[in-house]
Amino acid sequence: MSKQFNFDVVIVGSGAAGLSLALNLPTSASIAILAKNNFDQYASYFAQGGISAVLEPDDSVEMHVEDTLIAGAGLCDKTVVTATAAAGAECIQWLADLGMPFTRDRQDVSASGYHLTREGGHSKRRVVHAADATGKALQQTLQAHALEHKNIRIFNDHVAIDLIRQGNHCLGLYAYNRDDQHVNVFSAQKTVLATGGASKVYLYTSNPDGSTGDGIAMAWRAGCRVANMEFIQFHPTCLYHPEAKSFLVTEAVRGEGGKLLLPDGERFMQRFDERGELAPRDIVARAIDHEMKRLGIDCVYLDISHKSRAFIKSHFPTIYERCREFDIDITRQPIPVVPAAHYTCGGVIIDARGKTDLDNLYAVGEVTYSGLHGANRMASNSLLECLVFAKTAAEDIQSHLKTKIKPERLPDWDESQVTDSDEDIVVAHNWDELRRFMWDYVGIVRTDKRLERALNRTRLLIREINEYYGNYKVSADLLELRNLVIVAELIIRSALQRKESRGLHYTLDYPDTDDKQLKPTILDPELNLSKPAKISLITP
Image (cartoon, rainbow, N blue to C red; front, side, top):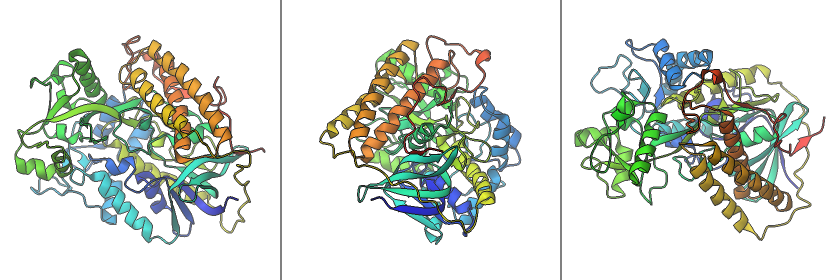
């Protein structure tokens, strides 16, 4: 028998977006945060670069907007970009008031007092940071405050399964408890998806293991539209070492003068873009991919060793220490790097208040398509998006919360017709197959032939996984695989629809940009040929 928990607001995800939203809600509201993993297993925790914000007199919101629009390759919503950029300074002040340990300017050069870095696509230094571990500092700051709030209850090791829908209203969700292996019911006036992206769908990624597209898949199954899923950002520089496991080397290294080199020491970025190493991420990642394939090499190199030892150790302490673990001294030698899947620029369609197509369902952060990123996300706009939309969504939720309402009894999770699985190898095999063919066929450079091959394999896996899901008790691995394969199909279908190359979507069949396709790619579950089964829904 499953337990039912009743809250005013249930937030799925305990990264920067989910924690920020919870802290922006009134203390009178009862709030549940479902934490899938430990607090240090979220993509925001690993964000090294920082948060973009206009803080200096030689910068402006208009310049930040223009840089974002250029990076987004024509697909950003200018209204959304402007509102987000304009809110940056207020977000930084909010974090500073919470005690966020931002790195300060030691030379009193900046008017704001913060040390600001410049990253790819930015025309000015506007990235506020905490050394090279901004995400970790942000996560720890938000977590400390959330743990102090008596109205916030954190459910650790809970993996969301499906939303519970009645008509066009979201009533809550089912979640699997890893500890006791039971499924619980969570009833809520308002449900918020803050589950992050889906980069784990690729074999190589900078993201933690939990980035399996859970919120995107759940919303899709419940009937929400998604957009721009073809735009997957590959971070150009992840540490290449067999034991490193997805360690990102922040873009700020290039912002501070780091040079990309071939094995013979030759620089190559100027052949691809006049901005060199400071070109947007899609250009840099594609250039590295091109050189690796052209020369048949395993990696390229990122060299910051021309800077002083003191400078490197003070600006990039995390990278320095991590590389030292693998006998790489970045003060004397270059860092071996490769591209890896890093950020999902598309997702669940939301409005300016974080509202989805389903009443009472909100989404915030990387799980969403807000119109901010367009065809390519500019560096350090992601944490800004989390903060800005967490605040606007919290304001809208607060204005619609009702008091003293009797929670509705929702249906228990039914597993009376399933058994324990004795074929877990099926999950492991399908997981590996999916991530490998997504890397091979739906990666940095695409063709229609590769995409069709990937789509055929994905549909076979969907049928196999759905059959497995229907016959056996759920597990965390099965739930993540079930979500990943849906996200894979959404990425492939979106990529097949875009018959041009734009931003992060580059196809050899259509290498040019086509202004007739200057619009987002929207997929609607109600119109989709491979329409998903709406599981765990209550009939009207």
